Image 1 (tube, rainbow, N blue to C red):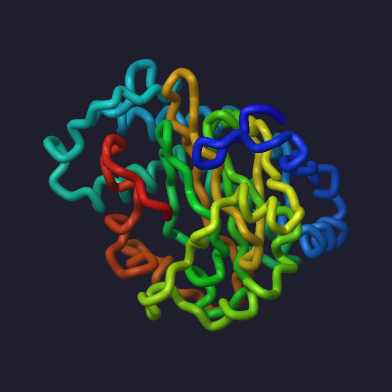
Image 2: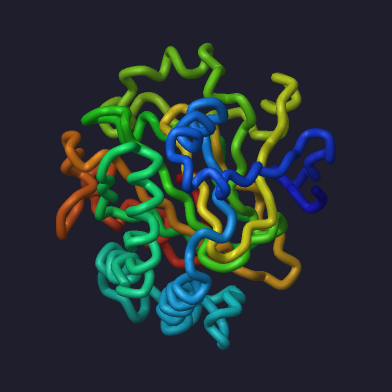
Length: 301
């Protein structure tokens, strides 16, 4: 797979692989769970309605057109390199919450299709967190490697991340990347147990090592693919992931979101539920990278 880039370096072909498609297992829930346990993730190709994805994409990018950060037509998602967000918007957090709670976006991210998929995977009625991580990544941006454990396991670790590309996301646009076999990296996982990123601010949740050098050192691969509208990736709290670098030749914004799901009968982490969720740190949607203008420097997570 050509075009995968990490910190300006092309990932060699022998170090990258395609996420295998598990969509055929949706009618066999036990087999789906076994695949999740074995691989640490599942990729489901084309399981969501493309019309829902297109509507969500249009809705989000219309907001960014309105603040001068994305050019018309909105659906193309081409960054302008400029921003009037701080000129036009008084509160970044409230603005990003309004974008993240758009009805067309929520019909995709919290809709019936995903409820059914997650109930099959979890073996019980499933509940999504209300708080959403909506990500709009411009050229040059990437998310460093991390586990989700330090962010979302305060109540329990029976939490899954659902990652959705909101539109087609080829590898040159910087999609999700998973480190193959990293749910078995006990030397990294064991010291992390009990770590809560909001309570222990002396530690960093993102690894200092980049994805390419880590994969080379451990003799493993980086798994990703050219994602299409309707695709879904689900993974647990104990697998390393991040994103490739967006080096879109046309300046396209990588648009995606991730929402955490859990069995509905388990305790809820109050930070991520309700009409005004505080988020990881208590700052609400203002804490998210997405609340910053697209022209502003981007730090991981």
